[in-house]
Image 1 (tube, one colour):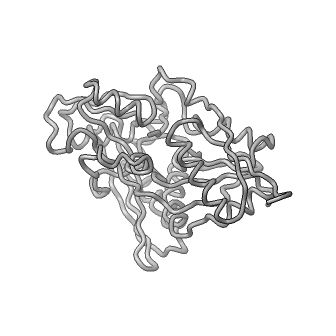
Image 2 (cartoon, rainbow, N blue to C red):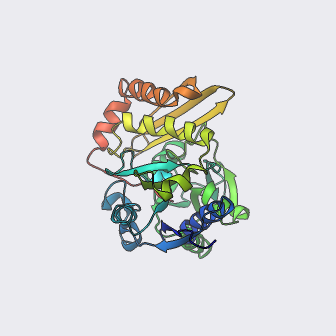
Image 3 (spheres, rainbow, N blue to C red):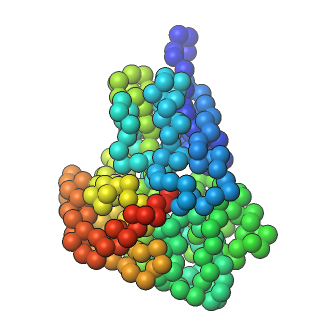
Length: 311
């Protein structure tokens, strides 16, 4: 279309990140917007030989992309929403949240009950590690880094007998055949906003913001709003192993949450129901309930052990 501005989409360079950016690019094209993808390397992409828990908190996979947004080098950014801190930099806004993929965690290489004691299970997440230790203390949980393909290759080479991964990433890459078991959220809660994408733009109501708004899914936004309000109410950046999962039935929203000590020995589960339109209030009230329980002590103890949730 002559004269039409080409929007620049900022993305990480991993296969999954590029799939997500290409998906958004295709949806924008359907709405009549031209776009191109600009690959940006983040801190989390550069540091591959150190467990994420030792590097720092949220923002490892978003900071450089957000800087490109602020500088005007890109017009939109596509993130896995669980990588995005609950507080955005000044001048940026979450313009849209497309339809959410399956939020559940999955096991590759076996089932939770079927894996023998002593089996090594790879994960880069303290949340997953803590829940695995709580449910199956006989397993050996080992840190793993790398993108989806790298993790699957390490499993096939025998470095790990099983992996815990996100259903969303495997599904988006057409790798559902690798999944041995979907972990029910009633027993194994996923990360806040797992399976959701965020389209971040400048808060200037410019072309990027206007284009992104057409991709917004209100039901996905409500579930994630409840989960992120919960995380913010627990301190947001405290980075304690927290799992959350919101579901909608009719006009009602149910939010489940768990706070687990890193060793898996202390675990607090709670749930709360409310209206879809009051999603944020459901999350905040559940956070208050958790902070009035033993979860407060678990969170306080975890303050000195920051972690980043990444898949």
